Length: 238
Image 1 (spheres, rainbow, N blue to C red):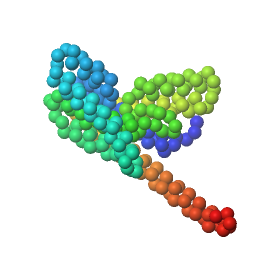
Image 2 (cartoon, rainbow, N blue to C red):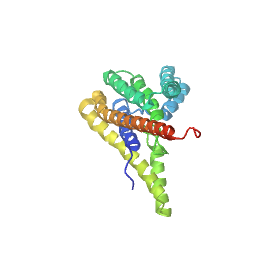
Image 3 (cartoon, rainbow, N blue to C red):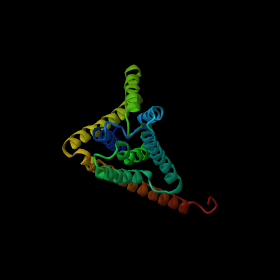
Image 4 (cartoon, rainbow, N blue to C red):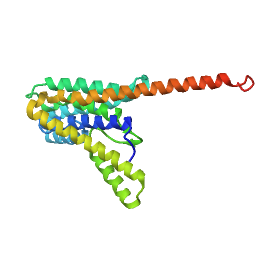
């Protein structure tokens, strides 16, 4: 098994954040999952068909916020050169701060608005690592890919299948480490436990900074090397 790359390590740490956000919402906000629109869209149609226009409207806003999170990642990537992962970590921190100050008696859908936006943004910002497309905010596909990778390795003994299963398996494990942290944090601090997630966010931020510095040094070294080679070439070749 090869050493875990910095890229994969960042991904796994953000999966801890994703697991925390998902469990925090379920535990503290009436068992509603703020990281996925599947249940929200189902409840949206149930509210519409059942005549609950207020709930329908609140859930429409949640859908729009989720869509805005995805939209924002695309715009930022197209219009700026800043690493989108920095934006995601900052947005997670801001949204965690917001939910920590939203009182328990506020409508649970409204209370989850920051998480709807933040997790959608994180989904696009941390969508892959080591060549694998993997979500850090929910785990169904990660479970499928883990089973697929290890099953294929058992059948074919191809090291790539083992690497496949291990990557998704570690992502799945990391996600549920976040769930465990959210559970115990919520037991002691209730809805104000969101601040506990600042620790994995800080670790992820440090890892992204380290990777960015390494990439900058590599790019500078490559430019200098190419310049030196060009300077040494005979004039007729230049």
